[in-house]
Image (tube, rainbow, N blue to C red):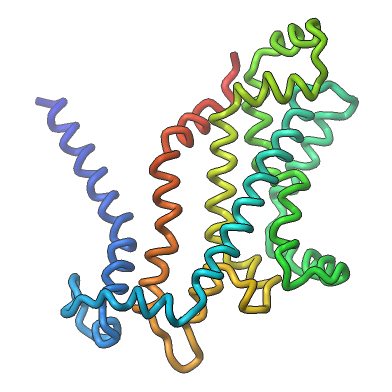
Length: 275
């Protein structure tokens, strides 16, 4: 009887939390299917009085969302490629190779994680301005090919340190170079952690609003997040169209996470485990 009661309590808590987290998503869909009058009504309605599917068509006709979509895809895919390659290389150097001051250098790099992003905005923008690369995709893509992010390096380093060193020694005896060990030994054993890095990079860049807002000024270069902001004007805000577009924008994130959640959870769980 005690087990049943405890299970009922646990399930009740989980269902309540699930509903709490699902409600914003539901409200977004509800707003996307509402008329302007329903959006700004004083009476809170769980269901709209009139369901309007044409909001989705109007949202895509009012802005070049196809162009915004391809811009976002280009930025996101290149960031994933750059982050996975360079962060894994850096993590390999900090975990599998012995060189003087390795741990001290890694510790210094990790202190940079404590620096707020807001502090770096102006120096970064000034630097890209001197290079005349603002209003291009370069500031949003190039950094991913120079380290791939400190958190990704930390995550992969912790995973690589859990792989037995005997595998490296056996490969060295067989005549393999350090790069061959990285490519043929470490990477095949680290698929779960690489998927985690790729997934985190995807979510970060797909939903990024601040960086594109800072560096991009031409509408032809806008990403989806900047495109959504166009529905909010100084005198008029089309919330129903914005929510309709936002509903479609989050679909790729939901689909990818739905199929990759198993690898994501396993990759996080296995990070830092020692053999």
